[in-house]
Length: 177
Image (cartoon, rainbow, N blue to C red; front, side, top):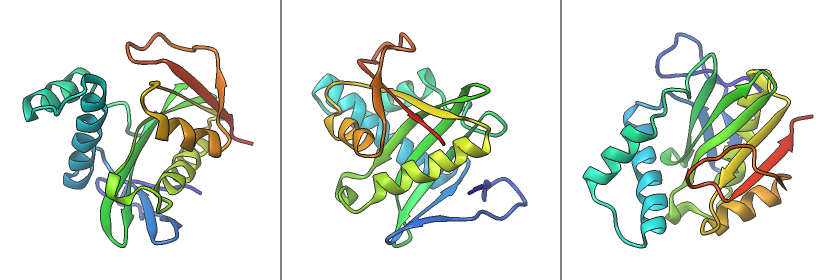
């Protein structure tokens, strides 16, 4: 399924729906996408540092790890809405012509267990196919146990390290056939 950007494009998005979830491509800088990216960073940084993060630290993290690669033609960003409320997001970017990478996958804690992670993965995999990818990879940390379980449930297998990311401790891959 090809999902096109609804925010900065004249093309109409085809939503990917799962249960009461709708996931559509959206520019990473829209208000909803920005709120979700900030929540993502607050959670992953807070878990890593084992404390709450400040707004200034979130700002710094978003500057240090920009999402500008998550736009066509090399990537996409999606926002997931549960009953119309923006509660999930994720990005996909090409690493090479046949390999895409998942990043910024986030579901609001209050919405976990409702199918949002599955809906995000399905939409992001569709986006990866539309970009020409034949496989999807990702890296994650040991403390993000829910994320690792989600990926395993959806056909992602652990692989040897494919990057040297500063926070990468586990690497996964899924073929898109």
